[in-house]
Amino acid sequence: MTSTFPATESTLSATHLAKLLQDQYNLDLETSCKLFRTGMNHLYVVTGGGYKYVLRIYTFNWRSKFDVSEELRLLRFLRNNGITVAYPIADRNGEYIQEINAQEGVRYGVLFSFAEGKKVPRFSAEVSYNIGVTMARIHLLTENFQVSRATYDSKTLLEDSLKRTQSFFSPKIDEMKFVAALTEFLSDEYSRVNSNDVRTGVVHLDIWFDNMHFGDNDQITIFDFDFCGNGWLCLDVAYFIFQLYNTNLDEADFKAKAESFLSGYESISKISDEEKRLIPMTGLCVMLFYLGMQCDRFDTWSNIFLNEDHLRRFTGSLKRWMAYNDIQLP
Image (cartoon, rainbow, N blue to C red; front, side, top):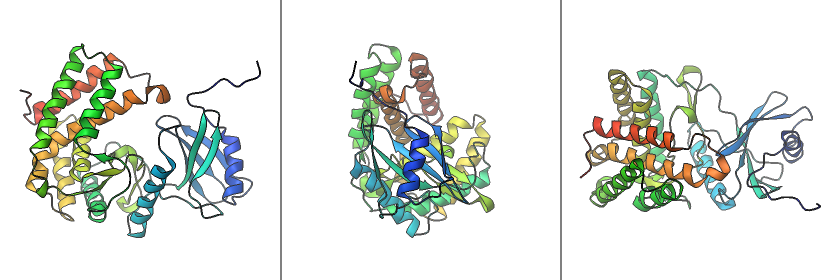
């Protein structure tokens, strides 16, 4: 057999990526590149003489080159305006995106600065306040800003996501009947929103502890803007508060951190009453979107956890959030 069998997603050789980086970025010959993790995208840690970077290799057919360039444009804009983010590094030709001919087709690679500090899953209310400040500072810059990427509206978050989820799980099982009913309810609620009282701009859509590092003096570095797009800024607020609720099972602990986060945010930028009303519902919208993404990209990400047990736990967390916020389906 002489032909090469097609692949859905390959894992690129760290050794050969190191050689590519040495050449394209004029890095020293001692530069090492080690695979950190695969998944949504493949990440490699790059180290050498006094420097440390992160190389992201986008999964095949996930983002277009233009999508990636818009993400990087946003990151450069934020960095130039004083926001601490993991930013893209230009190569010796001034280019930010590497095109790599992988077995399955062209993959894109971007070298990012390393986010100093570490992840802290169980942070304090004081740190929660600082996260609120950081998010608000980002939103002040991205309000009325726009990127040529996804727009997170009712169709993207709900309608399209339901189709993706129903293509993976049988619509006949109880959990999927709940997902369908919740999608219909939220779509109806979306249509009732007073959009004049809701700020729009560019959202990160995935700000939580896994995408930030805490450094000295509580310095927060935000990274992984892979899902950035256009939408209501309160989507970021709602998603973060939902994650707080989901990871802080003690209600008093959750309330203290949520209130501290909102106080930090509003010390920089006010949240309208309409946006506050939307927080419980928009948190559900973002979670349904990510469920759809998990189903849509299963062949690439090979999520072994994505089964009916996962769906049961996932919908269980949504139901707890709904009960906490007194949201009831018709």
